[in-house]
Amino acid sequence: MRITSLIAALVLVLSGPALAQSMGEKSGVNSVLGVAPRTADFVTEAAESDMFEIQSSTLAASSTAGEVQGFAKQMIADHTKTTNDLTGLVRKTKASLPTAMSSSQQSMLDKLNGLTGDDFAKQYISYQVSAHKTAVSLFQRYANGGHNPQLKTWAARTLPTLQHHLDMANSLNKLVLR
Image 1 (cartoon, rainbow, N blue to C red):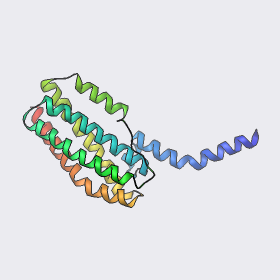
Image 2 (image 1 turned 60 degrees about the vertical axis):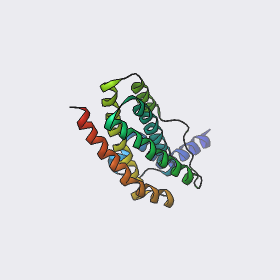
Image 3 (image 1 turned 180 degrees about the horizontal axis):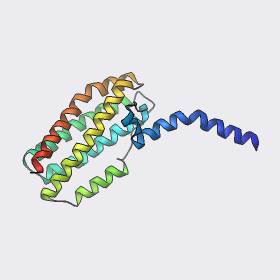
Image 4 (image 1 turned 90 degrees about the vertical axis):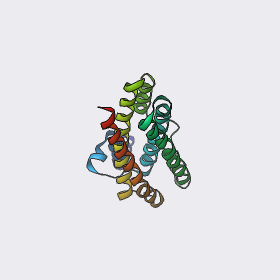
């Protein structure tokens, strides 16, 4: 019994950094501290982000007009490309792609499904600002300190596009709040 307890404690101590890093990513602590996510966390969060962007923007493309609709169509095109790029890169790693977005992203998508008109546009753009702030931070941190060289290079190459998306979303946010 004593040896089993000792082994269990040793396993917890040795796996602590890996668990803390993953928990830090989930809780947002890594973002605040500027710590690079583990490769598996980066892949999961990047893929979930793309899923949310594509699905929410598909709704927006059919529910809005003008600049918001144009933005939504660009998000669909750009995030479909990053999904395809990531899928190709992940085949060369030990990471795996998630099959669904996070529960919080699904909740946001569900909320959008219940909105129409200006309420929809305002909420969609608000979500886009938030999602792109998170994505910019994620890609920036991985580009600066990630462990997989190919994903690190891809994150650095993709970062300007995500920053541009954030800038566009911020500009649209000012328009829809008038």
